[in-house]
Length: 432
Image 1 (cartoon, helix red, strand yellow):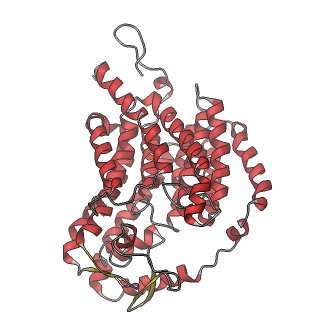
Image 2: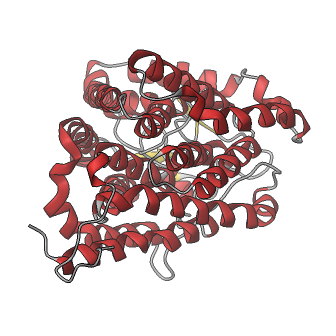
């Protein structure tokens, strides 16, 4: 039995994530610490946050259930294997103009960040009482949306693009956060005792933000999200489908406004010769030897993006192509696909762990099918795997990763009907 002080401290820790995540939308955390090239601000922040949530992880970790724990275990295998295998591969090389060998620590820190973002995202949820978890994550989303829109002009000037980007990722990746926020808003709108105003604000704001990213992967993920909700409702009659009217209304408005967004026609152009070559050449490189097929090329060896994003080497200057020459042909500087990165850099071991992760997430969605608000968030998580085909979430985009894991924890520990009301304290008051 948890004491009241422990419960209250956990709720305060969880609420502290609201300003933290809002700050993350404004500040890019991947800059190096003054004087030190590593560790990064991101690594330091994740170490502190994971340590803060550790007591609630220890007490409440079993609340996640078997499917979520298998998911956590599969990703832990990816991270641990990537770290253990690093010394057995030759030094990674950044072969673009001005590049060179990549020190081992530059490959180690991203793997540590990947694991810590998982621990922190889940810890954020576990530290709060069950009846508060959705509300806290929803308010964090609302604060993040406000900061994202306020910072849009500054991000556009910095990135030289009108597309919406934030401190937690460029337009090509941050759309996953906005999809999750739409789902959180709809869940808050639907759940018993939820805030309808907060829910509607998240649904509308999240969809506008998603459209503003002009991401093709984001649009495909939205379609998958809607399809999964429909399938879940048809299979189990999880609730009255008419309750989903806010999502329908936002989609109608979005469809009407989308053509007015500058440059939105790029969404309908799915051809990308560089990504196609990246896929073909990476698979050719992976298939050159039996050892690379089984064990992979090594984390950061096919795509040494940490060497550029941490400032060790400069990105290719204007006039030079942003590709990395290899014996199999040119690769992009980043994998641009989570499954591709797992297979090529982690080998069949990583690919198998990734497959287990996907199956565990599907089981989590199936377990959520009888509760419409829970089904909505689970559908957004499962739909986001479509976006994983277009970038390296969980392995590189750690701001997005933290949000994703927080939603995994939320779905896995969703309160039942009897858990909506907070427990009474010894003096008759309510905790939290």
